Length: 454
Image (cartoon, rainbow, N blue to C red; front, side, top):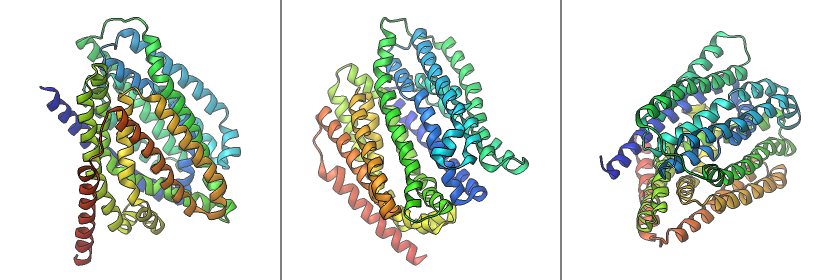
């Protein structure tokens, strides 16, 4: 199978699987809201925003390092051991911190004692997450998407199945049932990926040992890890400041969590759901771009970047039209929440920029531009925290929506500018912007007419 056909086949596999997994996840969120309501969803999101700090510590950079090194033919047994070892050490540290500090975090940052036990339960899954992230990087570099995809379905199925069983048949609080389901799903993922990886290595072998592999892992994973930790810490601070700011604006504890839960737990999952159709191709571009960059094939880099811009925006503008026209239906069908529909319509125009930003970030990773992404993401996150701290107590949830727009425009603009400069691309206004925007406008009018008629 030639390179182009293999890329298209892998993209199709990841796109279809990503779509179904996100659809399954979105459905599961509707089930969760029937047990915990909007304020419970807000608490659920806050717990995961803190937990994500631990996930970042043990995964960020190591999966990318495995993918990059394997794409360059350097995925030796020593490389695998070092990536896994570093990831597991960091996961052990993160587990200890979250487990021991759970009561303090729950009372002083989340402001709810109900969050302590769920945090401890989630922390136990960190070593399993670290192991999966590292091993999956090898398969993606080898353009083998089937094995990671089957693992994702297995993990999602285990998580949802166990969570639903506990929600319906146990006396545990709903949040604790959900966290146990999540942790056991991660255990199930490791029970799948480890024997499959060993069998795959036994059949295909690994690369020969090369010198300086630890330094290369640190070079790739270090900036990603530092940047992700900084950004995740700031993102966690941001998520904790939002309900606090809403309380200062006049909302009580339940209302502030509910407003936060509507935006982060309901609207954002719908808005980012279509990203599953393009994020697969974007992820597969990392080894393709890394290989072209290692061979100094500038023409290939420019061509792939141009295709990425054109087709991502051609997809993003019509999706924004769908969100605007069917905001009420989406908000009601999935969550039965009128405020979710209003905010979804406000946020819809941001969709094309969010999608292209995601694709550009993956292209920059393949081009060894981790340090630039670190700088941009840090500046963006610091700015958001400062704006949230000062504006939300005064202007409420409206200020947060404006901050989201400003942040996405700032981050995407700098990342796109860096990619255009590095790949020596010139912006094709007609095919990149005007044509997709016209398609989006036509989609809006056709759907609006369809909605009126039927």
